[in-house]
Length: 116
Image 1 (tube, rainbow, N blue to C red):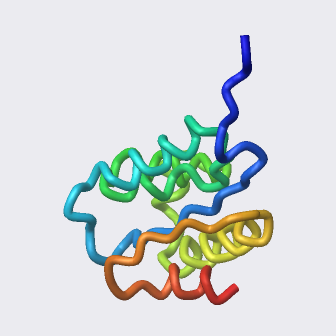
Image 2: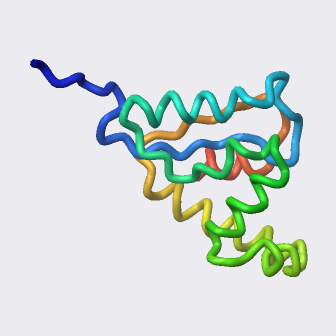
Image 3: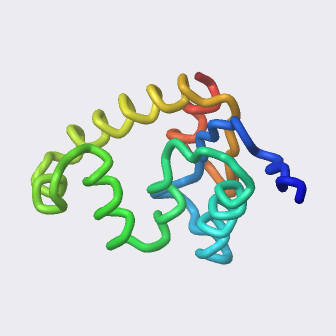
């Protein structure tokens, strides 16, 4: 029996999408896209980003990503959250072998990540 070759094996993907910008026409599309890459062997460095359409799930995932409870995350001032997100995301961009970006409108974050 031959082993199925996964097209994204050994690929470390940084998924970039607008979190506070324009929502996708299909709010499930980012999650489906990331799931497809994972099912085909990709390691997704930032699995919380496609959850942006579901505020509760996104807040839970991003707070956990930063080692905080939801309450601790929400207690941070906006600029502290933004600073933590930026630092964390740039580290992940540097680890990525590939970047997949959904560009549906203006986004400073996506722009900075692609520029990096």
